[in-house]
Length: 369
Image (cartoon, rainbow, N blue to C red; front, side, top):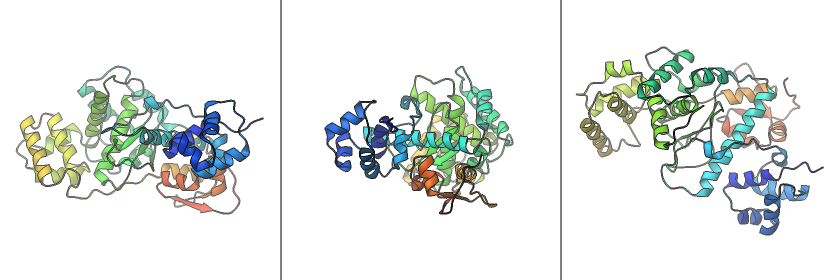
């Protein structure tokens, strides 16, 4: 019986951002033969063929033996900031699908319950909320995560991870082609593109993606821009609650005054200015004026005041539990053959998703049940 899954060849090709012709060239096969393997789900895949494709794509042979997770790529939430190539879009979707599949397998292996499912089900709206409704949902989410109703969120990533959401940096290089994060309805999983982005931008990205997980679990606005606006409104309320904003922001504030807000709440000056406008604390003219000044001072991408970059730990800890390599400090020591054999991904990719928190273990290992 053929144990290889032909559909995994397409996933591997898209993950690498290659055309079918490029996959054939890298694998030392003809495009016609690759087309037969990809286009015919009943094709008999020989170990020799898979060995060539695995070598070319730098993926373990076990990758081509796994079933398809079955994610609908059209439901992935990531905003395209400008026209991007199909290859880049495919790479983003393929990597997120591989990450989601890995998380699912690790959860089963380590007997980690889906802590996020119950509270997400409880709080996720089924009808379209207005702006105030989105803010109320964000406030309720803070309460569910054990955060006070006011004040800064000291560690955005840790606050979300403690309630069962997996957060992982993705390896696909996107520059400014898309938004900073990716989520999928029904998956308590957030992927983000680090690429040396400042800590305040990362915090807003995680809050924004959390907004997608909560607000769009059971509903999805037909207008993509409205969906993004809802997630931004959620992130603004989550990081800088309305009562805090009204207490510290006034119409007379100069641009430099917003640096105080940034240092106190870990939210960028740009996001704080937008928050002030959304809450009616400043009018449209003042909003435009402040952004003009930001552009003149080159603050759009590089603002003063550093906000510490946060790092995820939950996925690394789950891998440590699954393979019996979690020490008292929370450091995960895992075997390469276990990662690549059971999860079907390169050790290096797993380590990237774990924010470089894995240590390779050469000794024998056992899966914790």
